[in-house]
Length: 116
Length: 115
Image (cartoon, rainbow over the protein chains, first blue to last red):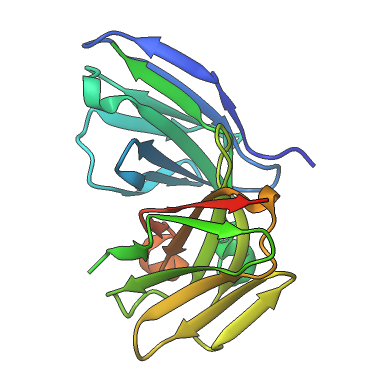
Protein backbone atom coordinates (compact mmCIF):
# COMPACT_ATOMS: atom_id res chain seq x y z
CA UNK A 1 0.00 0.00 0.00
CA UNK A 2 1.41 3.39 -1.01
CA UNK A 3 2.00 5.87 1.78
CA UNK A 4 1.40 9.60 1.81
CA UNK A 5 3.16 11.23 -1.12
CA UNK A 6 4.21 14.84 -1.49
CA UNK A 7 5.57 16.91 -4.33
CA UNK A 8 7.85 18.53 -5.08
CA UNK A 9 10.63 17.26 -2.83
CA UNK A 10 12.38 20.60 -2.88
CA UNK A 11 11.16 24.05 -3.85
CA UNK A 12 13.19 27.22 -4.07
CA UNK A 13 11.42 30.57 -4.29
CA UNK A 14 12.25 34.20 -3.71
CA UNK A 15 10.59 36.60 -1.32
CA UNK A 16 7.16 37.74 -2.43
CA UNK A 17 6.53 34.78 -4.72
CA UNK A 18 3.88 32.12 -4.26
CA UNK A 19 4.54 28.45 -3.51
CA UNK A 20 2.23 25.50 -4.17
CA UNK A 21 2.82 22.20 -2.43
CA UNK A 22 0.89 19.01 -3.14
CA UNK A 23 -0.09 15.98 -1.10
CA UNK A 24 -1.77 12.67 -1.89
CA UNK A 25 -3.11 10.81 1.14
CA UNK A 26 -3.11 7.09 1.70
CA UNK A 27 -5.84 5.44 -0.32
CA UNK A 28 -9.06 5.45 1.69
CA UNK A 29 -7.99 8.31 3.95
CA UNK A 30 -10.26 11.32 3.78
CA UNK A 31 -8.54 13.73 6.16
CA UNK A 32 -5.38 15.65 5.33
CA UNK A 33 -3.28 17.68 7.74
CA UNK A 34 -0.49 20.12 6.99
CA UNK A 35 2.33 20.85 9.41
CA UNK A 36 5.29 23.19 9.24
CA UNK A 37 8.65 22.02 10.58
CA UNK A 38 10.87 25.06 10.79
CA UNK A 39 14.38 24.95 12.21
CA UNK A 40 14.22 25.50 15.93
CA UNK A 41 10.43 25.68 16.05
CA UNK A 42 9.46 22.03 15.92
CA UNK A 43 6.33 20.77 14.21
CA UNK A 44 3.46 23.25 14.06
CA UNK A 45 -0.07 22.41 12.95
CA UNK A 46 -1.10 24.45 9.90
CA UNK A 47 -4.35 23.21 8.40
CA UNK A 48 -6.81 20.32 8.47
CA UNK A 49 -8.98 19.35 5.51
CA UNK A 50 -11.72 16.79 5.61
CA UNK A 51 -14.25 15.92 2.91
CA UNK A 52 -13.15 18.91 0.87
CA UNK A 53 -13.61 21.46 3.63
CA UNK A 54 -11.13 23.36 5.79
CA UNK A 55 -12.03 22.20 9.31
CA UNK A 56 -9.34 23.80 11.44
CA UNK A 57 -6.28 25.99 11.10
CA UNK A 58 -3.32 26.72 13.30
CA UNK A 59 -1.87 30.07 14.27
CA UNK A 60 -0.68 31.07 10.80
CA UNK A 61 -1.54 34.13 8.71
CA UNK A 62 -4.16 33.96 5.93
CA UNK A 63 -1.47 33.86 3.24
CA UNK A 64 -1.22 30.18 4.14
CA UNK A 65 -4.18 28.54 2.47
CA UNK A 66 -5.08 25.39 0.67
CA UNK A 67 -7.76 23.12 -0.57
CA UNK A 68 -8.76 19.50 -0.79
CA UNK A 69 -9.88 17.98 -4.04
CA UNK A 70 -12.67 15.41 -4.60
CA UNK A 71 -10.06 12.63 -4.70
CA UNK A 72 -8.93 13.80 -1.21
CA UNK A 73 -5.54 15.03 -2.41
CA UNK A 74 -4.62 18.44 -1.11
CA UNK A 75 -2.72 21.55 -2.05
CA UNK A 76 -1.03 24.05 0.24
CA UNK A 77 -0.51 27.55 -1.08
CA UNK A 78 1.77 30.08 0.53
CA UNK A 79 1.43 33.59 -0.86
CA UNK A 80 3.78 36.55 -0.49
CA UNK A 81 6.61 34.34 0.68
CA UNK A 82 8.80 35.56 3.52
CA UNK A 83 12.25 34.33 4.51
CA UNK A 84 10.87 32.74 7.68
CA UNK A 85 8.58 30.52 5.61
CA UNK A 86 11.63 28.39 4.82
CA UNK A 87 10.82 25.04 6.37
CA UNK A 88 9.91 21.43 5.77
CA UNK A 89 6.19 21.19 5.07
CA UNK A 90 4.70 17.87 6.06
CA UNK A 91 1.40 16.39 5.04
CA UNK A 92 -0.34 13.69 7.04
CA UNK A 93 -3.50 11.71 6.50
CA UNK A 94 -5.84 9.58 8.55
CA UNK A 95 -9.22 7.95 8.42
CA UNK A 96 -12.18 10.05 9.43
CA UNK A 97 -13.93 9.10 12.63
CA UNK A 98 -13.09 8.14 16.17
CA UNK A 99 -10.92 5.56 17.83
CA UNK A 100 -7.35 4.39 17.28
CA UNK A 101 -7.73 4.11 13.52
CA UNK A 102 -8.78 7.73 13.18
CA UNK A 103 -6.25 8.98 15.73
CA UNK A 104 -3.25 7.64 13.85
CA UNK A 105 -1.78 10.10 11.40
CA UNK A 106 0.64 8.94 8.71
CA UNK A 107 3.15 11.44 7.42
CA UNK A 108 4.63 11.98 4.01
CA UNK A 109 8.31 12.75 3.41
CA UNK A 110 7.71 16.49 3.21
CA UNK A 111 8.52 19.33 0.84
CA UNK A 112 11.56 21.39 1.68
CA UNK A 113 10.72 25.03 0.88
CA UNK A 114 13.59 27.48 0.72
CA UNK A 115 12.83 31.18 0.40
CA UNK A 116 15.73 33.34 -0.78
CA UNK B 1 -3.02 25.21 27.36
CA UNK B 2 -1.97 23.66 24.07
CA UNK B 3 1.71 23.19 24.81
CA UNK B 4 3.57 19.92 25.08
CA UNK B 5 7.00 20.25 26.65
CA UNK B 6 9.67 17.68 25.84
CA UNK B 7 13.03 16.97 27.46
CA UNK B 8 15.91 16.53 27.01
CA UNK B 9 16.66 18.24 23.71
CA UNK B 10 19.41 15.76 22.99
CA UNK B 11 20.60 12.48 24.40
CA UNK B 12 23.67 10.31 23.92
CA UNK B 13 23.47 6.68 24.99
CA UNK B 14 25.74 3.70 24.59
CA UNK B 15 24.62 0.72 22.55
CA UNK B 16 22.56 -1.55 24.77
CA UNK B 17 21.63 1.26 27.14
CA UNK B 18 18.24 2.79 27.92
CA UNK B 19 17.07 6.04 26.36
CA UNK B 20 14.44 7.97 28.32
CA UNK B 21 12.54 10.94 26.93
CA UNK B 22 9.97 12.86 28.94
CA UNK B 23 6.98 14.97 27.98
CA UNK B 24 4.54 17.08 29.96
CA UNK B 25 1.24 18.58 28.87
CA UNK B 26 -1.21 21.12 30.24
CA UNK B 27 -4.50 20.49 28.49
CA UNK B 28 -6.47 17.74 30.23
CA UNK B 29 -8.65 17.40 27.13
CA UNK B 30 -5.83 15.59 25.35
CA UNK B 31 -6.72 11.93 25.06
CA UNK B 32 -4.24 10.47 22.60
CA UNK B 33 -0.47 10.53 23.03
CA UNK B 34 1.73 9.23 20.19
CA UNK B 35 5.48 9.15 19.79
CA UNK B 36 7.01 9.69 16.39
CA UNK B 37 10.50 8.84 15.13
CA UNK B 38 12.07 10.97 12.42
CA UNK B 39 15.23 10.28 10.47
CA UNK B 40 17.00 13.08 8.56
CA UNK B 41 15.25 13.88 5.30
CA UNK B 42 12.21 11.79 6.17
CA UNK B 43 8.77 12.47 7.56
CA UNK B 44 7.89 11.40 11.11
CA UNK B 45 6.84 7.77 11.53
CA UNK B 46 4.52 6.60 14.29
CA UNK B 47 6.38 4.52 16.86
CA UNK B 48 3.89 3.86 19.62
CA UNK B 49 0.85 5.56 21.13
CA UNK B 50 -1.17 5.47 24.33
CA UNK B 51 -4.49 6.66 25.72
CA UNK B 52 -4.95 7.95 29.31
CA UNK B 53 -6.87 4.85 30.42
CA UNK B 54 -3.66 2.82 30.71
CA UNK B 55 -0.43 3.62 32.55
CA UNK B 56 1.97 1.70 30.35
CA UNK B 57 2.19 0.28 26.87
CA UNK B 58 5.03 -1.79 25.46
CA UNK B 59 5.84 -2.64 21.87
CA UNK B 60 9.10 -4.47 21.42
CA UNK B 61 11.92 -2.37 22.83
CA UNK B 62 9.72 0.73 23.13
CA UNK B 63 7.61 1.49 26.20
CA UNK B 64 5.37 4.46 26.99
CA UNK B 65 4.75 5.24 30.64
CA UNK B 66 1.81 7.53 31.34
CA UNK B 67 1.04 9.44 34.53
CA UNK B 68 -2.37 11.08 34.18
CA UNK B 69 -2.34 12.88 37.53
CA UNK B 70 1.05 14.45 36.81
CA UNK B 71 0.15 15.09 33.17
CA UNK B 72 3.37 13.48 32.06
CA UNK B 73 4.36 10.67 29.76
CA UNK B 74 7.66 9.21 28.74
CA UNK B 75 9.27 6.99 26.14
CA UNK B 76 11.76 4.34 27.14
CA UNK B 77 13.93 2.73 24.47
CA UNK B 78 15.44 -0.45 25.87
CA UNK B 79 18.62 -2.04 24.49
CA UNK B 80 19.25 1.05 22.35
CA UNK B 81 20.83 0.34 18.96
CA UNK B 82 22.76 2.62 16.56
CA UNK B 83 19.79 2.34 14.17
CA UNK B 84 17.66 4.07 16.83
CA UNK B 85 19.66 7.27 16.31
CA UNK B 86 16.97 9.71 15.23
CA UNK B 87 14.85 12.58 16.48
CA UNK B 88 11.88 11.59 18.62
CA UNK B 89 8.77 13.68 19.04
CA UNK B 90 6.02 13.29 21.57
CA UNK B 91 2.62 14.63 20.64
CA UNK B 92 -0.91 14.92 21.93
CA UNK B 93 -4.34 15.36 20.42
CA UNK B 94 -7.95 15.68 21.44
CA UNK B 95 -10.90 13.78 20.11
CA UNK B 96 -11.96 14.09 16.50
CA UNK B 97 -15.11 15.96 17.50
CA UNK B 98 -13.17 18.54 19.48
CA UNK B 99 -10.33 19.39 17.15
CA UNK B 100 -10.08 16.83 14.40
CA UNK B 101 -7.14 14.95 15.84
CA UNK B 102 -4.68 17.76 15.10
CA UNK B 103 -1.40 16.92 16.77
CA UNK B 104 0.40 19.23 19.18
CA UNK B 105 4.06 18.28 19.20
CA UNK B 106 6.84 18.52 21.74
CA UNK B 107 10.07 20.17 20.65
CA UNK B 108 11.84 16.92 19.82
CA UNK B 109 14.78 14.96 21.25
CA UNK B 110 17.78 14.08 19.15
CA UNK B 111 19.03 10.66 20.23
CA UNK B 112 22.49 9.40 19.33
CA UNK B 113 23.34 5.80 20.13
CA UNK B 114 27.08 5.18 20.23
CA UNK B 115 28.32 1.74 19.16
